[in-house]
Length: 269
Ligand SMILES: Nc1ncnc2c1ncn2[C@@H]1O[C@H](COP(=O)(O)OP(=O)(O)OP(=O)(O)O)[C@@H](O)[C@H]1O
Ligand SMILES: [Mg+2]
Image (cartoon, protein in one colour):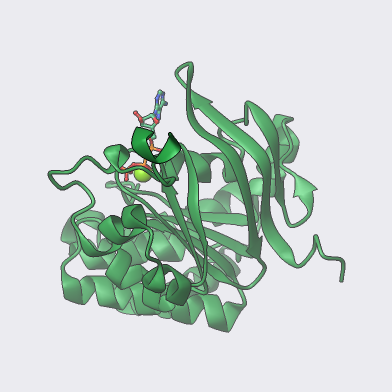
């Protein structure tokens, strides 16, 4: 296996602009295949933007994004092909309210395959079983709790057996119990299916325990990249505020210097 094949996602010198503004710059990141990577950081720092560059939804203003060794294609047809291999759990669940749970999960299978109906139904049942919701197949989204709806969205994201899963804030709106269920499900599915998972979250405490790699996005770039243990042990004031304080607390996150302050005048003289 080449080194690029063992790297699921590689960003090299990536700059991401939105609305004429640079959101993230000089991004270098390697996500090992089969790993769970937590992308952490406060609101509005560009975590979802980073995911958009992996799915090809946002074309980098500079640099290159590779998925399983291949540059993210720009041609729509090739991009569509690549995206079949990426399961995405969106920040909202994105379930269609007038379709049953089973039909929601069947959507990607209907869109991208021509499987005979009985096989398709069996696959849907298997996916729902994997998230512990086989009995909910005929319910409608309005009949689901928040945690159940998130699991249906997860089953749908897994429908095409993608080797890469992207989760954007999978815990938003869930209580601690439902959050625990989702995180252990993500870990179990990742391990048993050998998936590469990137979890974007500002829920540090829930996300770090299941991650192999932690990345912190702040101040326009990646300010940390290492193991969860290294992150916990970091003395960097910015990382400590994020880990131990409220990410949107009274001290604006952006105002904390990420580099040591320049020496004071009397020290220079
Ligand atoms: N389509 C867009 N056009 C212009 N600016 C955008 C667009 N999408 C996002 N932005 C801006 O890019 C920045 C990063 O947004 P992004 O959604 O990536 O942050 P985030 O870290 O995912 O935040 P949150 O934790 O709240 O989801 C924000 O300042 C946002 O206003
Ligand atoms: Mg976001």
